Image (cartoon, rainbow, N blue to C red; front, top):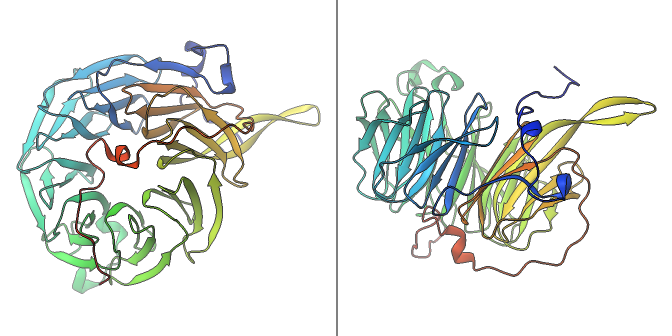
Length: 415
């Protein structure tokens, strides 16, 4: 309800206690160090009850958000886990062993193995009862979730396929001439060949090729109502595309390094970059609204969060809305910024290496790092953080140490 605090995740806070005396000042509520290798990805279930981590140690683990305890160990992959997605009743993982696995979240048993890719599987996406995957074998694939069989193989990229996004058929215009082609929706892929492609899922055909980037496409997000894709690249730009016509709509040019992560919220695009900043842009015009600067190294993850906190108005306590941009960085720290002013509000210290993924649930921030730990942080209050000296620099090459970032490719020329 408007004006009232979310109850999601609140059961966690009374159970856990900070690991040091700093309390809400930036210390972890809990440190989960069960993995024996770096954590490459972190996924939150739609119902908010579980977390899933995928690791360099070849395993995935399920965690309860109620108490932060590991509730299942998912073993079976023969190499490191690159990515994972958690649904309410099933978990999905992909690996450098060229396979994808489906798991029962209650028992931890493997329900299905998806075989067919011939190289590292980079990303997976479960949507509309379909499973999509991208791989270093230069293909993306669509799978029957229940049978574990390939429905379509999308071929056309000249290098590794990194990122995926899906637009369902009911979100597409209903032109009679396009109804059959769009029946299965559209899959958008981004590749180290510098291109993004739009595929008709029902036929497996390439609908559009989005040319313009001069570097690898590392990330993409879709704006469903306008049928627009936003892509971020090693060429330091973000580009907006009409995925139906293939037209490039605008270019966002102010970053000075690779664009590593993107998020689209309320007609604003948030971008994290190797230039150590996050920028906020107007999605419809490409105008930069503000820059979030305080990072000691590349911004490797970001998450926008709309929450509430309790404050005083006169003598009465009232709930007010709080809009926060959380970031993870190669300097091994997470940060919280006021989304409206850009002010730094808190720094979360404790990780020993790059933070690969972040999630927020209720009043808890979850950070997963290449140091092998999952950390839980209390984000209530979020006072403004004082200035701190810069952290030691770390090699940018380690930013993609989880082997799913960017394959080496020859320089690309503008199309």
